[in-house]
Image (cartoon, rainbow, N blue to C red; front, top):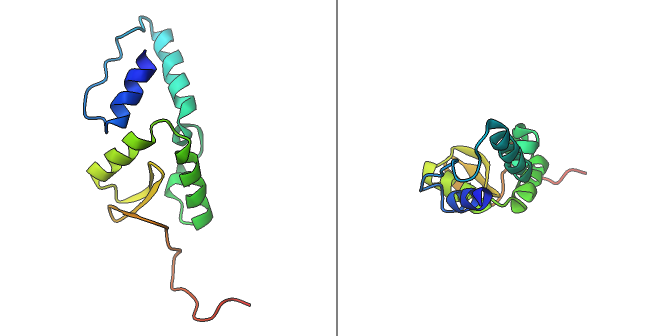
Length: 115
């Protein structure tokens, strides 16, 4: 019940309050629930730097992990609302508060392809 309520809240962009008092009565229950939710969210169980990486391969890896996340829609909606300056949010790349299709590497592209 609580997980469903949390997922609905986040998928709606976090616009309504989530009450943690629905079924848990002890701090051990809350810790168990928090750990269960954290295990479902890739950005909580992997290196957080991956979602703010400079290398294209790492950014694509973070986007792929986001595609499996049950909170993807709410994460993306929240990032759009907050105009996140950069990083991977909800499976999309943000640069300057705008979603971009692919993160471009640093520096200018080569005039001639590398041999």
